[in-house]
Image (tube, rainbow, N blue to C red; front, side, top):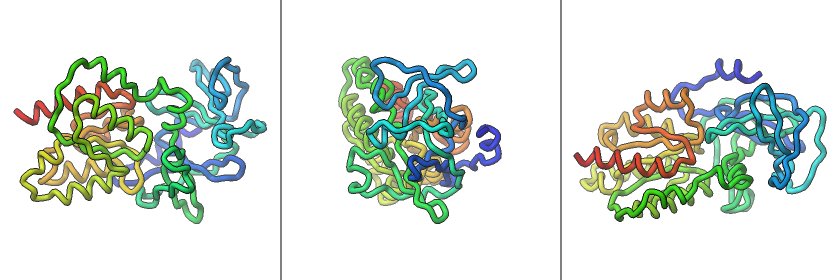
Length: 307
């Protein structure tokens, strides 16, 4: 039922807006980026899978696709809960995976600016291990935006960034290039930084959102060492304050910065998103968690820039 709705609310590229789908678990309000949502369906019988994570209910097969079901109430509350006949499955697609999340109700969709999403206080979010990436003001309601990438990475570590991909690249020399990375997920930020350091890119600056990276670039404006201090930019798409598409637009429309190679590294890379990124001027785009591919692309862009 969502596919038709999404066609009517597709966002213009680079406007720094997000469509937040609001849903409830035990009357608490949570949110997910509509760009991650494939469809919403009434909950269905699930086949249990042995030795699975406690939050994994099992699998079901709508049409011809086998999909893993995550019991989101159990994951968040760390305790079994009753499954109601009116529960819904939010079927998502990100990181090239289809995963369904059980929720109690779906409230609606709000279009807001990323500036209306604040990073949660660590005392509320659970510190560095928190599962909330932001608190959104949707009308009169405060909505907790969940870090679905972290949830999936915790449940199935093999689906996220693998350092073995860096090992497969073989011996690498240390690079003097400065890599600027905008990534709001604390878990993925740490993993990306570790992978870059392991691959020889030891001069990294990590930013929790596009706004902070953009502010840093503006501090360098006019600096004769700009290319040494900002050799390449890597950005996620969905981030509080300023998303990756808006950041890409600002950089590629700016005469001082447009020459800096920019890579969009996101779980949301689809044909539609790839088209948006290309229109905004991104030099390369790729889906997480392909960290080995990311390093090879950085190599290529920096080599081309040096010619």
